[in-house]
Length: 295
Image (cartoon, rainbow, N blue to C red; front, side):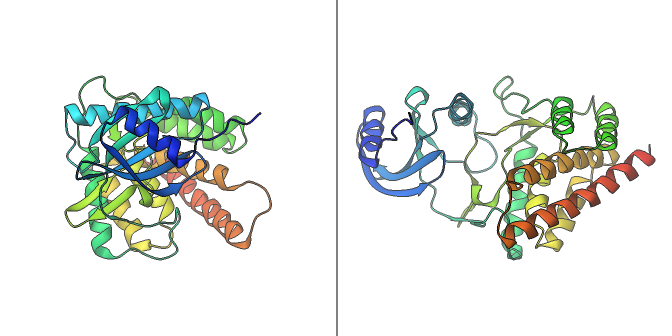
């Protein structure tokens, strides 16, 4: 039997319980896993995030996001993030500052190139974040790279040679310091404001091989070749190891994106997206093999 999802009034009552003085506004957005509700505390505008999917996986991700905001309260990152107001992970509710801004893009895969000023703001924000060192122990490794390669290989998403090539690159990267990343660098998670860009939705944050956030951006910006070239230059500017880390990230992000979108017969635009993702995967596959050849 499906669990009944509370309505906006019940969610507002939960928010008021953990945040005295809360006044509810309108529903901002519904997703398959959450509901966002506007409101205020005193004169300050806030956003309430309620997790509508109580499955263990998404509850763990929600707890992780709450812990991220608590970490940012103790030590502010060098990029703008919403300020934590109150949270109760067990009741699946989070109240945070409302950041007034527009998303860098609403689509996961934007159909047109971004304005150059927006590109500069987005890339500056992620590269600044990636240089930050959070307090020790506050964030985990996001995932086990060899295990993920093995899982995608067993699912048939990577060929035997792909898996072997990635394993070879990973052996060479075993001593490369991990980099703190947002982990879900889709453009709807970047709010452009008069004071610069702000990042929201921290449920995937953690340590990755260098260049993970840039790999996500590159994957999603196929209609913006100029920005793609800029991302590649930025990701590889520290030398061959940063290049190899970026290529590993890029291959895994592309395979994940193919898996997310390959859900049976779809509309023509979905088929075009899958063809493009497979083309990009082939291009990255060749780059991985070329990188191995230079070792």
